[in-house]
Length: 339
Image (cartoon, rainbow, N blue to C red):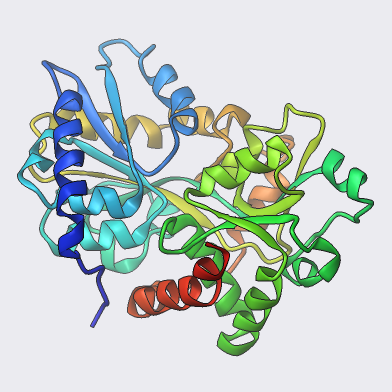
């Protein structure tokens, strides 16, 4: 049986505030409302290009954490949302189990092979990312530190008070990164690495994209992040991003809400993202992601995409089964000690 987030009574006020704030984002006329766990900058380029298409409708985004969207979409106001765009299979699993998602058919094999089997009937992979380390080279030079390249490097005591990361309970993206480490190293060795590196943390960021922003500002020298947040910052010459040698793939999923009042337009948007034109847009460095269809050999990003595509998939059944356990262990052993 899959473990689910419990909704504490103390969260009632927060939920009321969320639903009240959501009313201003309800779809008006022929526009789509897309709930997403991504930051506004991560979706701006895709939406801007979509809206140059003839006959396209406006898309308004509702940017929230996975836990916040899970609570909100469980309410009656879910009928105001048309689409969900996320890297969290846990969120989509919850929504599917609660009959919130509409079926979607006709997705290409290149997309569906990236989707966990349990949500394949409703969810589509339109892009993919990998995990690695965002590094502030200027901050490293100031502290006379070498650049880390993998999780094991983060355990070096020379990085004390210099690292940043988020918590699995606040960021499903970070949860997938932590699970990737636990599944690759094994439960005991994985936690040993996490606990050793935690001694070097300066803080725990409330959002995964907050890690990238804080590293850019110089609060820390490095931290594990998903590539699409890092890649959008690499026009700064002081920053660098290094993929973990065995980075797992993190697909970007999209699904249509069952009660969407604009379901045909929502499906049209998904088909656009899966089309050759949509995949070319997702191949653009402005998205920070990779398309699900292979890039041509001459593309400078093709080699890294091929590496990610050849990585074994995460065990999503195991992730769902121990989701709450991993979150509680991380917060008890790491997050609360830094508070």
